[in-house]
Length: 390
Ligand code: 3PG
Image (tube, rainbow, N blue to C red; front, side, top):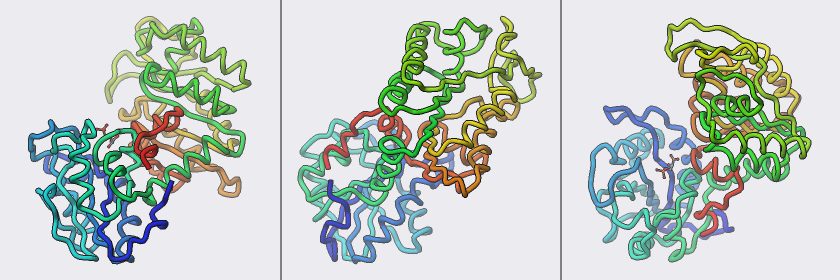
């Protein structure tokens, strides 16, 4: 795969696919700029080459062919202008051609307003390709989508991976392909059904030394062991699969710790009465919303003695203060691992970014991925179409 520095980009028109799909509030203000900050080095490098930079991205999931204000990328153009301290021109209509000079930056309106983007229409891809002399695919977070602007263009222009895409792949390879052991994966979230492939891949192929599960996922495993889970979220239809994964883990010599104690309540709310219970004492009316202090102590020890860590999704309903301790403890364990131990940690996907930000440990994670779905697909061993296209 070619990388950006392989291409002669001096004074050229460079088409760059980024993922500027950032969360915004009702006033159209950007509430998390991680993806914009992550793309800055790419844009700045292109400026040093005096390239004419044409940025492409999607935002949300609009109906193709229908303009809707809330999906407009205009606020992103304004925001980029501010953080780059350089004008980023916003273009609504670009498919019939653009006027641009070397050293200028344009952000085109949401690519998903164009008919044919999602189904990777070759006519649309060719129109986009005509805008540039080269194509840089930098949107790791959309690399799992085979769309005109992520994959199609690469068939019509000399193309390469951008620096952000490169950084993401390098970080993930360090964990998935040649990790320093012991390697621990922490997989939280609500449903085993979303993570079955991932859990099996981590145990069988990646050969993690320890697999920590949390959230609703842990409940399904507890139920599969015959433990009481009361009214907790779990997936009764997946008990056999859960047993199978635990068996595979045992066969592979993978340690698979399940919560020994949990925080329970009868309802999910900020001011509810909570109880800490040993896992065997969960009652019929209880709902498990977090891991308990004994489990926290145990997991902290595992985390702080792991040379490599992969973290996806919280282990409790951390958005509610009474159930935030478990996820906070995971974050603190990573943050407080002594620097001299040289632990390498990668976090990403789903709600991981919110957790990392809420507990203020961004600077303690070796690499924080910009990917949601793309991160998950990559770590479960899938080949991402946009990377294949390069
Ligand atoms: C994401 O936020 O995961 C990416 O931007 C992809 O968005 P999509 O799921 O709408 O394709």
